[in-house]
Amino acid sequence: TQLLEQSPQFLSIQEGENLTVYCNSSSVFSSLQWYRQEPGEGPVLLVTVVTGGEVKKLKRLTFQFGDARKDSSLHITAAQPGDTGLYLCAGGRGGSNYKLTFGKGTLLTVNP
Amino acid sequence: EPEVTQTPSHQVTQMGQEVILRCVPISNHLYFYWYRQILGQKVEFLVSFYNNEISEKSEIFDDQFSVERPDGSNFTLKIRSTKLEDSAMYFCASRQDNYGYTFGSGTRLTVV
Image (cartoon, rainbow over all chains, first blue to last red; front, side):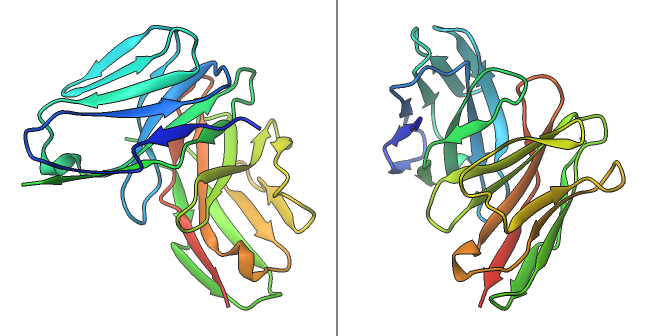
């Protein structure tokens, strides 16, 4: 069974602070995806990282895929209250089917 | 932006009853999925569907579950005889031939 462990599970910070969320596994994934989920809604894809060592930036969000393709991180610079939400990582295995294994998520609260 | 549409948004049913959850995936997508999320737990894979047949199913997807794509646009999940533990958010998702999933907003199923 492939597991993805996310840490921290909960994070409460002040507006303007930086933060990093981690996603770790003992398994290799062909890609890692990060999603954001609002209460009562489905996950919304933020980014997909595919190559070991890859770094992608999305405005104030920086995503990194570990060299061994087993772990990933999400770094947010100068967090804003609008960043509040549940951040999920999901690992995909190769092949046409490409099903996702999700982590449990990090619930981020950014206080004004 | 194209969306995956799910209906109903909330379904309450009595234990032992059959329910059908409906989804309209994005029209040019090729792969279709059902995931579920029990309250407070991870999003977990149920089944994938490609080329009009199931391509993979999880251990959760036992004989009481079935999927169908009856008319080329709708994608349904049927639960034949619901149990209390089937209460969850059920997410439909679709994707083209790249990695990116698009999830619907989900159906909250409550079995009483």
